[in-house]
Length: 373
Image 1 (cartoon, one colour):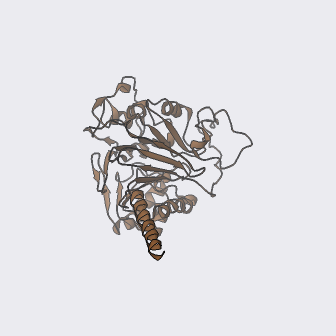
Image 2 (cartoon, helix red, strand yellow):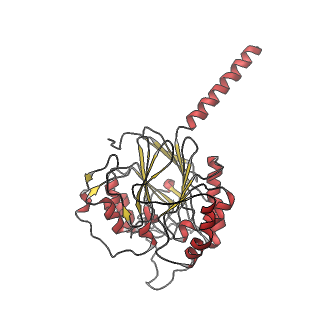
Image 3 (cartoon, helix red, strand yellow):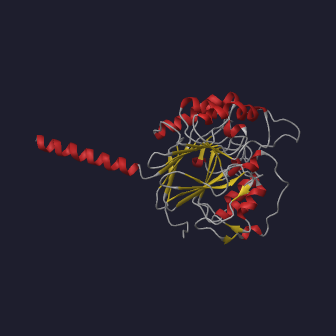
């Protein structure tokens, strides 16, 4: 009896060890809800981490740093190995100082100093950022640079309005969507400066373009698609219409697109039309139901991470009409309550699962859709 007991215990320990080893085989990603800002956490099977952006500043800094820390604790991390600031807008770097007080950050990556001085970014870059990077290291990245992340390939595809000029593995085809592409006015804001990333984990591939805008997307994807197709597109610029041209969205032909938007930011009909018509698309996931798109251009509720900051009695069918140009919109209600992230778990063979933690709805996308060379 006693021998049988020890055999059972030994079997359970072996099973637990196997399950633990199996759990460490995936690249895990947390798309954190920071109310229309950005914070995306990547953790490799070896436990190495990359955080892209740190959410909003000002009165929302403590809230967003807290939400990021919840994801960090869920990942079991004791430090952030690499932090990328895509650009110097407050919804992308705003909570970084508060976050750095709560967990060590070993390396910082950015495109260089801001081209759009604003009070918050000017003070941060003059006083706070030098103090943070003095305890770690700062790298000003250029297109083509590689982040030293073990077990995966992380390539910078855009930075400081410049884009990669050589083909990545799987890229090099002529992009048919460039024929109808028309450039817009030159974007002189920080958005165009954004650091964009291409992430490869075995056969699984993704792009996180930051907030690059229309013309930079054209430079990146035309006349040749230097990237190829991807499994996941972490949708640029919160799903706004000044980005997300068909040359990038349709050119990348993602199986899944994930939008980190807010109730009043991103997800406009013009962008949603392009995202939802992308060839090869299986699903779009949205961090929030968008008042800017209404029910006509949103996705089924199971794919929406967070609903409203103020729950209406009925869902609006039509898109919310923004105020006339030059008129300030009323401030969005502050959402300091519970928020929910999307978690993506990718396997080396290209299979990946997306989970909505609000309703525990998961969907697995099997490997085989992305061609590799």
